[in-house]
Length: 96
Image (cartoon, rainbow, N blue to C red):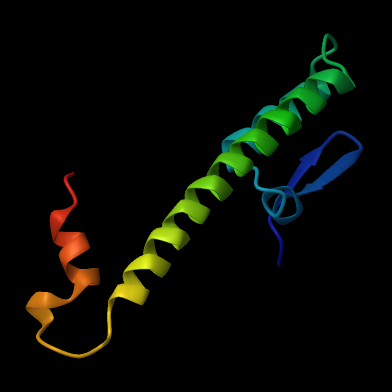
């Protein structure tokens, strides 16, 4: 059963909002805009644009991770001792 927020005259499905990438805190902030008489559609749009930028940043990070892992996978022939494995060596060489 979906988690719902009940507002005056509106029911908001949390799973629908979260499927767009919004966190529970962000959903709460969006819902608060609805009851703020000083808010407008522009406020909602600005938050959506900020979420798009956040998602694009995560996509770029994931793409870099994918490329790095592809390169390590190509360097690994799957043979030999684990001490020579380029994938494991890359993980050991990473600094926290």
